[in-house]
Image 1 (cartoon, rainbow, N blue to C red):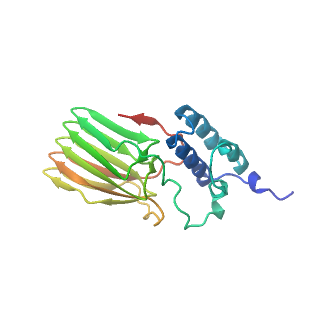
Image 2 (image 1 turned 90 degrees about the vertical axis):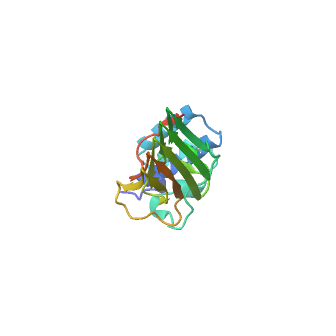
Image 3 (image 1 turned 120 degrees about the vertical axis):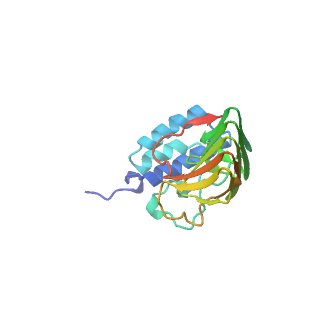
Length: 212
């Protein structure tokens, strides 16, 4: 049996995720549409070999590191989720609800406010405008839930006053490497609650695109 070429090697989940990140970046820069993102992600997650991944980003600016097999990637490489045009700086739920999830770019500072309402922020398929971002969450007689993937670093310093401001680790995974994005979450829960859930990162399904 002849030796396999790099393109014939079986693609790993990490290989697919790196290509998906290139597509997320292209969406945030306006190079492709949401429909094109969904179509290409379908191809990415169905790919069986490294060679099948390459045509997906052939017309997009990328680096060779994004397409090489995971085993050749150095631990110290910068995290490819960092960068892109920042998304909305606010999410407000006043007697209603606000949602930030799917493919979006967390700005360096995002303010979330809930009053007699709720807000949901999900970062498992997000990009990060800067390596260090901050979410200030204020819930007054309302609730805010923030879901962070276990492959980023999170620092929760908010205060609960007749309410709660807590971090619940649903993953149990070890801390992310220093090269990963870091999100600081501060704010106040007053007669309400802010709950930060740390969960396994989404690595094997196309993202949903939602906003409010």
